[in-house]
Amino acid sequence: MIQEVAHDAKLAALLSKAAHPYFRALFETALIGMWKKHCSQKEPSSRDYFSDFMKFCSCHKVTSDLTKALDSFHAGRKAQRLGKRKLIEQLRLDLSDSGRIAFLSNIKKVTLTCLPSPYPPKGYWIYTEDAAHDCWEDWILYGHQADGRIPRRHLLKIDVSSLQLVISETESCIIRDAKDSSIVAVIIRNFCNHDEVLSWANSVVCDVVQKKKSIRVCFNL
Image (tube, rainbow, N blue to C red; front, side, top):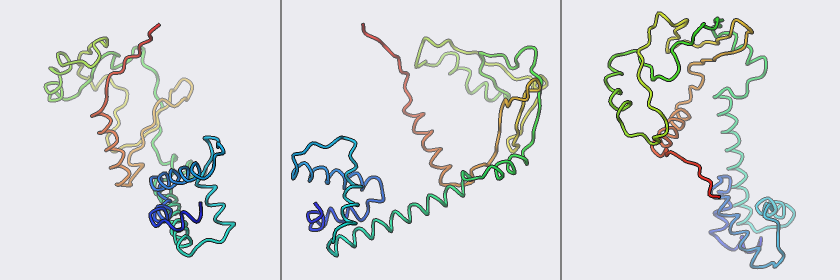
């Protein structure tokens, strides 16, 4: 298999770029095909052909072209790992316990007592601006429903004076229940300041919303 890869420019090119999952999958598919062609022995589906190939290369002398492909793969994997480590640092996903405590210590803490009756009441679409009501009322009350079994909800304008707390769009806050100090909600603004990650996350949400469907589970007995 090593010789076959070494003398196939396309396979060597795939190997050189195998740090990327797509090219690794293509290369491993080719390895599986070669194995089935040269060996009749059945292998478990869990076998990692790529890792086995890399181990075999490390224990045997290979051609200069294959050495270049392997060097390119290792360089790509190293760059990928460095990039991943840098991204984790930028997103602050590697904070130590003391780092998390220090970060959370700068966030406003609020303790609230549960209201006798929930407000706003459940079962309503809520709004604060009349413009929002005028924009959505017709669609919410008369528009097509993806699932007719779900009852329509009416709109309710929020009485701000009945709210215990209003959090501004720029404010971070940790809200606890006065009864047992349990956390009710955590709002952290601008935790992620990585534009590319935010753009990716936004594109995923937009794509899912466009493709969303009502799914009904049916059992045929």
